[in-house]
Length: 245
Ligand SMILES: [Fe+2]
Ligand SMILES: [Fe+2]
View (cartoon, rainbow, N blue to C red):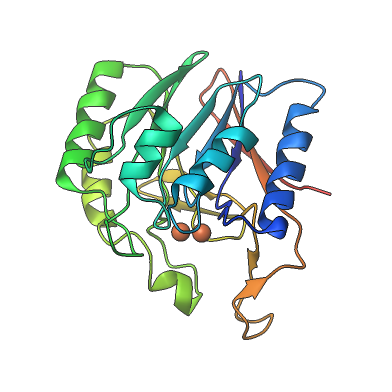
């Protein structure tokens, strides 16, 4: 059994309210009775992709368990690489595979530099295919920022992953993918895609107000949220969504 936590969309901007929500969330995760095997952070870590925002993220996300990350549309590959990965600034997609217990987690880059919608570009799709091939029968979770399904929210739907069909075609060639995990929605949600479970993490910063809740998009009254994903010996995924008090 593998126990993962997923958080998303910290949007660290130097403001007290963004910082405090991230601090509360990380205190909750560090204080769990049983530590998670890894924490996934699915993008929009910084709000303006500034070096100072990534420096704060690096401080806040320190934990006694592995922290696996991917960028979102508010991130920029150059400073993300320099500060969070300790690498030279480079504009290539940030794709990483991590082993966590008996499974693998692919943290993929669905960003399009300068845009807010998303795409798994050709380099990333080729990397996903090569990585899944190399993994053989190892169960794998595929995580990135932008979901591809219709959320029934006009704003979020205008900024979704635009090449879901290409992802579905790619994944149809593999039997070892357990689920797809994304962020970007600022609301906990569950769906399916290409015959796989699809989970969308709640946000650490403001939540999304749903169309039937009112017109204002941002909702600061909702608490930060965490998703816990359990992958068992039968490759079944159970997700628990939690609010952080
Ligand atoms: Fe976001
Ligand atoms: Fe986003």
